[in-house]
Image 1 (cartoon, rainbow, N blue to C red):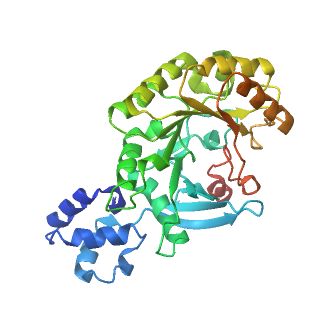
Image 2: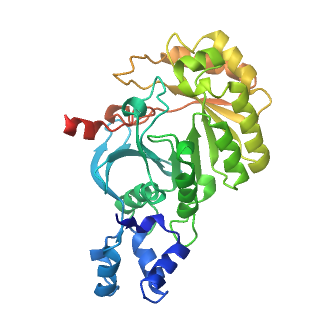
Amino acid sequence: MKGLLTDLSFEELENTIVNLGEQKFRAKQLWSWLVKGAEFAQMSNMPKGFLDKLSQEYYAQGVEIYGEYKSQKDGTVKYLYRLNDGNIIEGVLMKYKYGNTLCVSTQVGCRMNCAFCASGLDGLIRNLTAGEILGQVIAVNARNSDGSDRGVTNIVLMGSGEPLDNYDNVCKFLTLVSAENGLNISKRNISLSTCGLCDKIRQLADDGYTPTMTISLHAPNDEMRKSIMPIAKRYSIDDIIKAVKYYFDKTGRRIIFEYSMIAGKNDSEDCARQLASVVKGLACHINLIPLNFVKERGLDGSNKKSIYKFMSLLEKQGVSVTVRRSMGSDIDGACGQLRRKVINNEDN
């Protein structure tokens, strides 16, 4: 089976080229093409014989934009990407005043099966490689840049999949995407969202990675969280708080908690008081997320009045909190809505 060149660091690319009997300087030429999203046929300053030899063992790119849907409400764009094995994943580009944020997938499907999320409906198909995660950024960057600036300035690992369930590939992606001679996206502009794999949160800090840690909490107590998120049967909220304290002490990065507002479930005044107690004393911020509709899940989001009342109660307890703006819901591109829907429809 062919390898993927975007899985390789620059040093690994140099070694690969030398092992093929070529001179090391070709690595710099090849690298500059790869980060632009070029296929072998587009690499005009490279010897054809060398490219033919390389193409026998490697794919240049692992991700192709297969479809594009633009929200009429807010300009958000959902991309469908085709992988070399025929799987299709999704990602979302959100445009803000400060730059363009790309929501990136880390797995095909997901095995966490949270009660409000579409990504887990198909289960976990497979992990993405580091180059396939990077390939999403490369493809969208190429589609949205005129060459004078970057199409993607910020990255959130919040697409389909649990990033810390694909730990090694995600860590290598973080290294590749922030490489100075590559896309060079600042580590401070990258957020990683996890449902709370506590051992991996600690390991990430120990291994020297410093993305903004975003915890999908969604409940103020363990009993309620177990009914929403199966992972809560393994890790308690107390386990999560200890892990993020460790992460903060190691990295100095403020923790973000995500809290999807589910009508009649986790949006009461008592829930707000419990939540304020959970995060008391932490260097953190809470994002209240209006629940986005997923047909198969059958959960209703809290109304606007309930959400802002909940926010007010948290603020009175001294909690830093905002209501996240929901973007891309009309194209099934909002938080919790990404899945393998298109390939499922094709299969059917």
